[in-house]
Amino acid sequence: MAFSPDGKTLALGDQGHHVRLYELASGHTTMLDDGTIVNSVAFSSDGKSLAFGDYAGHVVLYNRASGHKTTIDDGSQVNLVAFSPDGKTLAFGDYGYHVRLYDLATKHTTTLNDGSAVFSVAFSADGKTVASGDAAGQIVLYDRASGQTTTIDEGSGVESVAFSPDGKTLASGNDAGQVVLYNRASGHPTAISDWSNTSGTLVYMVAFSPDGRTLAAGNGLGHLVLLKAPLWTSSFAQLKSQLCRELGGLNMTRSQWASYVPDQPYRQTCP
Image 1 (cartoon, rainbow, N blue to C red):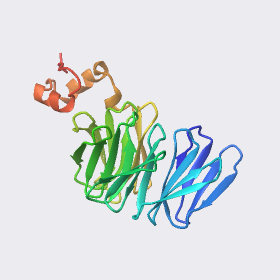
Image 2 (image 1 turned 90 degrees about the horizontal axis):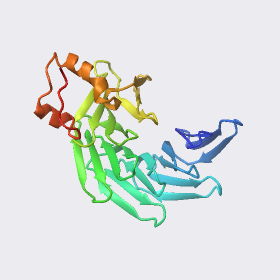
Image 3 (image 1 turned 45 degrees about the horizontal axis):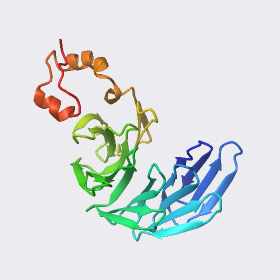
Image 4 (image 1 turned 90 degrees about the vertical axis):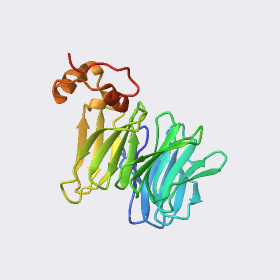
């Protein structure tokens, strides 16, 4: 499900072959018949369009003003759809080992081969990078300007990926029951929340709050966990005492600093 940008409408896709648009103020529901199981829904940034991907391998673009629907045939089950921040591009990942970027103006599709079923896709806030997570446990970062890709091997199927609003952190949820936070510049993990000691804890979805200070994660047990005031948003001054305590009074080595804080000059973490 997804909220419209103005927060007035909630879109829901279901296993009954429908997408429902629920108006929160009036309670009125508009029902769209898709014909098969709907896996994902997303609003454009201006709220004028709704996209949904389905089990039969279709992506449908719905114009909310005219009611017109345009169908894109992907050919393989579409697991997730996402609009770019400027609303000009639609990304979708499928079971056919592809991420596709569809230009809404030109109707041109750019296909990125992944090598495994793609479970999730997400745009960075500036729209310059697309991240995808796949069944083989890899996160692929695609630079739209250069066409270059960077691969992070997570080791367990990646169900969901999300960029922080400032673009500096990438979060993932995986089949091992972990939420992993990565420094986008270095690709190194900076934090891990581990539920792997409990069965059924696949992490299906992760999402940042608009201010980037809270990360929500939902797992296979029906639990929603909110990671509040996370370390990755804190200033160095706020972190210094905690880092010193956790490091046992020792400073980080320059090698450690280069690995985990590559975008900052070296500083001592203890007096």
